[in-house]
Amino acid sequence: MRLTILGCRAGVPADGEPSSGYLVETAATRLLLDCGPGIATALSGILPAVDLDAVILSHLHSDHCYDLLPIGKSLLNRLAHFPGLGFETAGEFRPVPLYVPAGSGDLLRRWAGLFPVASTPILDRAFEVAFDVREYSPGDVVTVGDCTITLVELRHAAPNCGIRVLGPDSALAYTGDTGMTPALIDLARGVDLLVAEATLAEPDPGPHGHLCGREAGRVAAEAAVGALLLTHLPTRDKAWLDANRAAAAGEFDGPIRIARPAERIEIRAGR
Image (tube, rainbow, N blue to C red; front, side):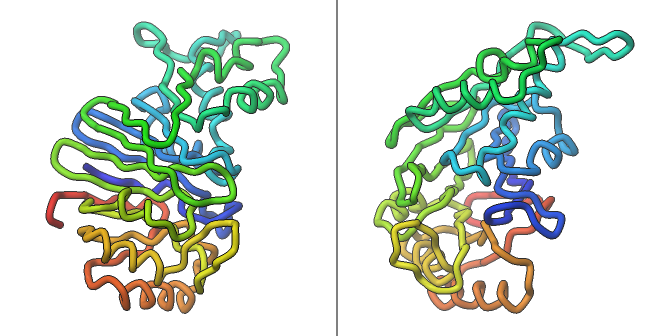
């Protein structure tokens, strides 16, 4: 399994870095986990969206889903026809499965109607044609290619599920956005890589739901993960990042990395 960090910025893009988006690949499967602002561009530099086997959203805050619409329109370009401008369609058009939290359908329909293209109405059907929308509930387990994906309810201001991906020979867990909750241990238990948000410098007991580095390290230790990747970062300031990593290292004695856009990580069992 390989993880490519397309974007890892908390909230809006900054310093040339996109918001949240992670490409997970095995020999047979390509998954996009979250799709914040800037991810459509970052993804297009690696592979065309049509090659994705699924897109999975942890939750519907804009920094995790905003680029769904441009990715959907890029898929629909293959069905549009403009004089002198053609997009190749190799074989039958295949919508990309899109897994979203239960109850998302109305929001997606309203969103798609905000920017109509009256002359080419196919471009307004991202969530009817480009994507095969599948609403999930916490606890659901789905299979995509050679991966088994488990959705685990966590604690955030919007309904959020952490995403656990079991591939043929390794496993990762991704938190989305969350505060501390015992469910994090269930999400991450024994995975080879935990991709954990570390948005804060100190714990926050409030209702919004974010982790600091120390809490991410504690989860990694209690879940006995192989390695920890700190992401959803509010700054690229070296001193802040070093302090957050040191806080995580005070709880977890395994390998710890700070996420950087365009970084690729090979995930192997026991490493």
